[in-house]
Image (cartoon, rainbow, N blue to C red; front, side):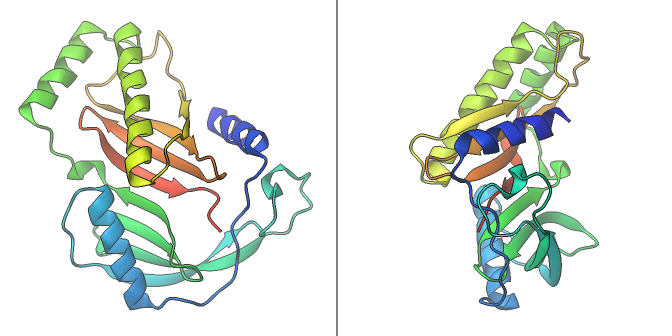
Length: 216
């Protein structure tokens, strides 16, 4: 519920957001696979070459500014996506959604089981968990560090010099039990009105999920 509230506030504040355009038809399956693999390898710092591709029609909001803030009279529609799974849908270690009409990658993911911590990262995680058994000051410092990391990552990878990063704290409070490793998610707004959702794992500082929430 908190995440939905944050997202709604972000949408209202930016005012310039345009919802997904739901047209069909400009790239084929081979091109979608090529685009997806290129983005998966870049974002997740891997070198994948094999993937399976399926084409599916999914619901989306109409191409209209503020559609998510209407009183409910906006009609749902749909668009065609290529679902790219590495290496396969049954054994998906990485995934991507590519919009058929534009060739844009609107969603990327990797399983957290892909991440192998270094000895230094393991020690850092153990030290923090031993120092604070519940969410506290030191965990809040790590969260702030992750927020800055997200900001820097967007500047480099999305070519945006001044993004707005909105942290999503979920249920993190002073009495929340902690785990050795954890993840945090952030909404990112660019100056031209693009809205992204980014999910980062700690202490590896690797991206787990990335999505363009208001892609055209």
